[in-house]
Image (cartoon, rainbow, N blue to C red; front, side, top):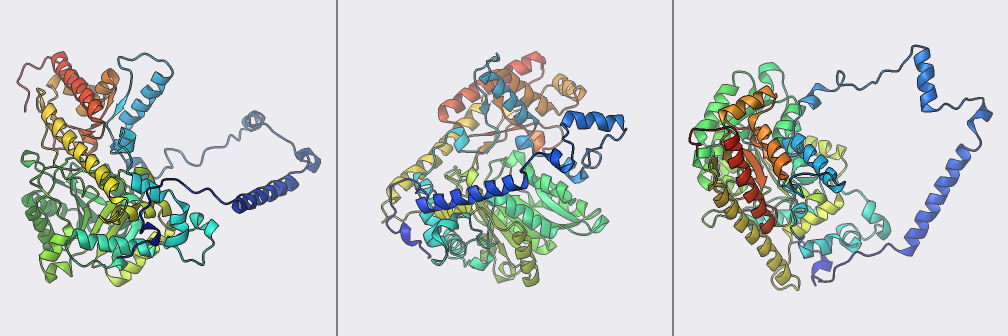
Length: 543
């Protein structure tokens, strides 16, 4: 395994090295030269060149008098219609409203609460989770980048601003390959199939771009789970692909049903060409961990129907149920034999943003792509080169996650303690969330087996449904908006993720601190009971 030399001692000393005085002096000279050149170009008033100086207001008046008011080039009429079609509920109107309320509170506006509790997004550190010390120590050091990730011939003071190869730094890709081999108990991994990405999202969108083609009934269809993470539906809209929904089985803890896959596939063949199936495991927003048998069924289905498989595995470290474990699609594919392992095209994704690290801001990630046609592989590298490279700091953070301290190294004890504490707290909060929600009349929550979210089903009385329709919004959107305005709790309505007709849900993270999570759940319980009474639901809420 490639081991970075400076990590051998696993220093416990945190800090970021200052830039050298020489570099500061160089920057000062560059800035002075730039300022001087600007002065030369603009020396003297514009009037001396026979030009007239207009203020913006004066120019507007003259244009109006001449009847030549300039129209904007980009308007809602000329905007790319695919951009207008994109929706991303995780940062949608509820979140915008929450931001407005939060700013109002800071300015002294009165609300029936003193803070906004944002449980809408899986941003661990924003919710109070402490960073892993070792990762911050290592990724925060210039010497990590300048001395080890690049050739020694590179100038030390310019490394921090250098691009890497488009696929990522070679030695980090090698570390990722070793990590995958160890995770999958010896299943071989070729680092040439590893591509470092700007979070998992970057890789997912890149692969979808490669897969979308054709017109009319030959247009590419993308099978996605419902409920789904809205990145998928947003990317499909932007790329003008055809979204093919297959529904997870809510009554069976959001399991994936092979019969439902066949139903969705056969129905879609009437109007598009299904080419890819996407799976999120552990699930977002549903929190389920798929069984090995389920994964094997999906891979067999993809093999028979000649589908490309995209496996979103960013929550692979987030498994809380003691009787369950994470199975990678790659490992199961390998165990199915050479006929499957050497033929099924599979892209798997991971990220620094989730797991136990929660380092969303680094935007680090990777994808492993198997069985890609060699000419297509060259096209993928070309596509990735357009965005130059992922952030080098994100690549470094990804390297620390796949290459953590070993038991004999000084940093191991603290690292292991912090990692265990984070995952242990998440497991406890997953259980508290499920148990508390299931005590509320009209709310039913499946076990939160993994990931970072609960996706409970909520009963909304018919009168409230009708009121929401009269307001031009989905019932669960109205519910979540009322919840925000009355309690300060920011959740995401289930309609933003997709759900079966006539059912309503919301997604909430389990990331707030245990104390704040209990406050959230208590407020949510009180609000829901009040909501049911307000709309005079005389029938027994469905559980």
